[in-house]
Length: 264
Image (cartoon, rainbow, N blue to C red; front, side, top):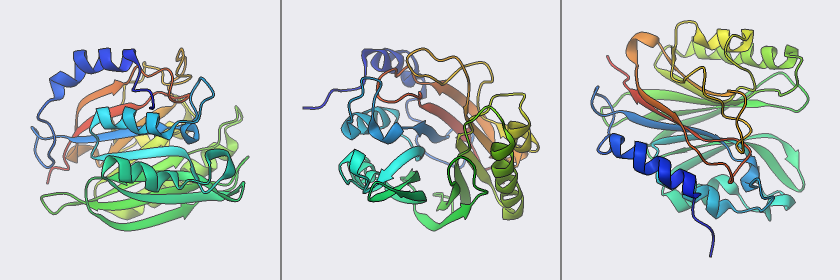
């Protein structure tokens, strides 16, 4: 028996998710796309317990269409040799894609995207090395109205000196500019509003997140480093953005954003 999401999550669900009921489609201003970004710390909670079922339970409550996950293991000893992206996808009934940063403990360590929408293409973009190797994971999905949207999951360098982080973000931003169609970039940027890192993505995009609500650490958030951007800005409207009050399942709190679009 695995624990369900915390009482705080359930309280938030009662107060907030009821306002979002019925918003499960895509392609009009009344049917938003439910997007989540969540650094799951390979399923290890603040109680130091590894429990991927608990991670799945948190995500299941949010009913996402697309999820970007950071700090995901595939076959690593510390997480029991599990392909975490595949297991979460199976538990949630979603397709999955994994982008490996590096070999780790007999397996791999990286990021992932889960999608209820058909995945048409998966492309890991190798970024400049920092304190660890990094990729930006791009997944193209098809919406019910036939629109193709590129979702790009990022997890940039974490140290105070932003040189590595900015270099990784610059390569990512250049790639996004080359796509041409609608794009949603989301993840753990490890930088805050006002930084030169985030400025790369704010230009021409819809910032789908509150600049004032912190996401890390989950037990008592102090800084906002988990973000969502949708571009081009003219094709998207933000319906709602919420930091989920989940203090236990990871050291980050998940972010849920409702996006209207892409509008033709």
